[in-house]
Image (cartoon, rainbow, N blue to C red; front, side):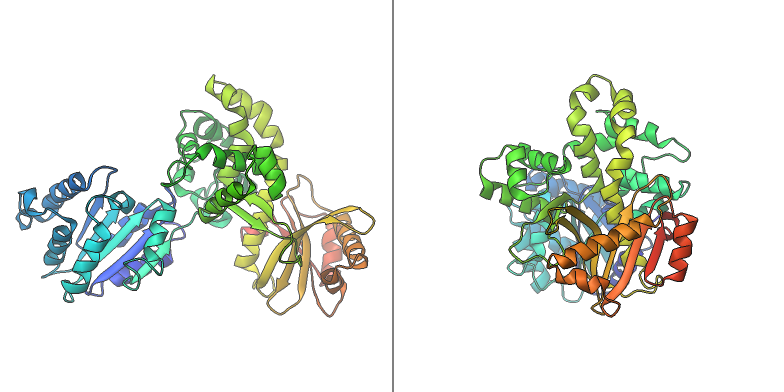
Amino acid sequence: MLVDRHVELAELRRLASERRPVLALLYGRRRVGKTFLLDHACQGFRHFYFLAADTTAGLNRQELLRELRTVVGDAVDPDPANYPSWRTIFRLLADLATDEPLVVVLDEFQHLLGREDDVVSQLVAVWDRELRGRPLMLVLCGSEVATMARLEAGDAPLYGRWSWAARLRPFDYLDVAAMVPDRSPREAALVYGILGGTPRFLATIHPGEPLGERVIASVLSPRGEVHLQLDRIIEQEKGIREPAEYRALLAAIAGGTTRLDAIVQVAGLGDRANAVRRMAVLEGLELLTRERNFGAHEKAAWHYRIADPAMRFWYRFVQPNRSRLETGGARDVWAARVEPLLNDYMGKVFEGMCRAAYVRHHARWGLPGAAEWARWEGKDRNRRPIELDIVARLDDGRLLTGEVKWSTRPVDASVHTALLRNLEDLAASGQGWARDALSPHTSAGHLYCSAAGFTAEFRERAAEDPRIRLVSLEAMYG
């Protein structure tokens, strides 16, 4: 079943049917579903798929020719010496598209880069001078995100030649639920919090299987499929040196350290500038994200968080228990060190889910889109600590505030009373946006998301007060 990728699928199939030269770029992290999407896009079209290996250019060309002969037969000269360069390979592909359209997918294209034969320059030469309107669609696909992204940069040789380019990203919480349709909303949320949105990870879950058993076998066990993938996710990106430093940064952030100086100290990296560079790489890979308090000055400190739930789970529960897991204690680790802490862990995951739910459902909830969405955490003028889970500036300029509760019992109206008190104290402390959030003229109301629903009393109060909007987990899943 193809989930979520229907727009990309339709666009690729439209391009494949246009009977003209088409150059397409598709990239994203491993196991995110690139090849699965391309398989669906190529159905019904004359096509050729080649998976490049991390070897020499000559060996890759020989293997490509061998596989191509199984598709087109004698149209390929059996002597590989007649194809001594990538230019001759691309010329051959162009010739094969003379009489009828051809779709060619070069997967893991990053393995063809940086070799003795400059594949990109050879492609440019053929593409610009020798295609002559032939219906060849060439798709370059790869999983080294930074390397592939550079192919569409403004100073790259292929710039201006792309007919289509896309970065395939993991699923959000709602698409994850489509991968596990037999699960309740709460269990589907747990699946997302543990495995994230990587389709291949989600495909390891068997219908009817207890979630704990799957996590033990696939994530906690050192021999599990998801464990093996997450363990090497940093090393899979070419150009990353000192992967231990990247892991140390992620571990520090997963442990709850969010400010840069504290992260550097906890990670044991003495060079602050070096840490900033490392964290920028992690942001580019979308493994790390950062945000400031709502309304903060542009020079205010950033708060860093792990963006991918699977990575967050890994560094929260797997990495700290590696020794015990290596000695066969996966079941004990789940029972004693994971399952009892899952509800606490899901708090931040659920905040991200609510943000995604707002993007999907705000119109159905009778609210404009959000131009800015953030949190606020700090102290008021009396040094009282305050945290607000939702502070958003909507497209119409109004302020939306709220709280997110991954609770096991229905949330009551005390959460609304506490929010109003926090806003009043912040307004008195000089936070102008807090005054706007309290004013009936500039406030869009207050949004509360609860995994366990709401008490009857709170629902009655919300029915009487249009400024209060209650969103249950079931409502988030539609």
